Image (cartoon, rainbow, N blue to C red; front, top):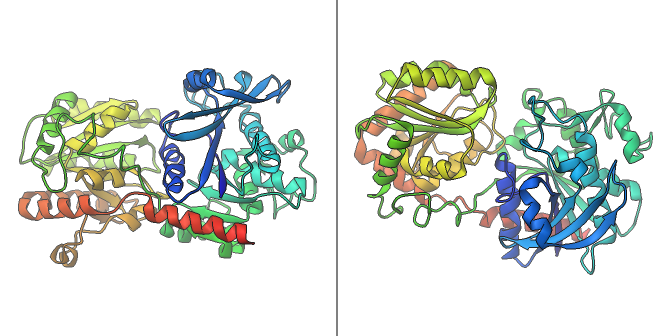
Length: 480
């Protein structure tokens, strides 16, 4: 079974969020089931060394305004197909945004070029390898199922589109369709058209053979007006082809017994040295040392979707309850400035690092007592899974994958020893305050807290079960 994944990012090579972690982990998990997988992605500047190491499979004299090459290279146990097109991808900073923080104006050409090249691979293969299924991830890969459909070939592979976050849809002026020769009969309300615009994600949903998303609860939420972001009608029409397959994490990379970012290893059986990470984290963020005070962390984009505006309002309550906070993230300027001011307002109780640091995020998971994920909506979320793995109890909104992966510490669940964190109703400062109060109260009961930590750390968070679900999905398509 040959599977071609196409995405805009892939860990550990280039990452802005959880999409990269998933794309980098799923092929490894599927390899254990005998699946041959390749990953197609753009050759951003961060991948320049891989481009130099790789083999040129194909050259393009003019791919939407400049020359390009398709490069094959293996790295980190992954088989990569890199689209080396400097005029499209050799740009500094964020892979999606320009220096002003706005989408690159030619994103339709940048990621449309990726889709065009992948569609060619899907239909004709590379060297002696041809995919049985093409798996498109998010809007950046959304044109692939449409372009494969347009070829009208009997030997075309099946296509799967995965929604990682429906809030990002890749909408462009209708004239963008001309670059891809999309015919009128496919540029319709049922097809690639979205209120007069070309919808990359909508194309992927309309023309894929199957649609998946990253948690069972989010799959149900997408069918509603509240969460469907205007695509709920299409998804309702394709409900029989939609499934929610829960994300996992790479348990080799995220492993407190071997993590080089931690000052000392620890495990579910022996958690004594977790305090070494706590000490290092307090020092890194300038927080007061207080073993009786729960240390919360946040590792996130600073946006309203993530509920970080709510947490900003809740910080006085968190401090009053005796808690402390270490925050790592970047996002909207008002939230970045708000958290900087909070760190000045509560010295020793609130520490803030604006930006992203992968190594620091590991230390934060290892050294914190609880991780706050107060999202208004969350397709799956990965930070709460890292928290479970590291015994850092997740405090989460009851939505999407957060609801599917965290068992609330109710009296019944505590008695049954199934609790792994705290859940709250999303979107409310009062609910967040209550969740913080519950967390601090639970932390004061150290014997119970340690029991919940043990349950959390023993919770399966890897890819084994989910990879099997993908394998079965691919098999069903190939059988057809």
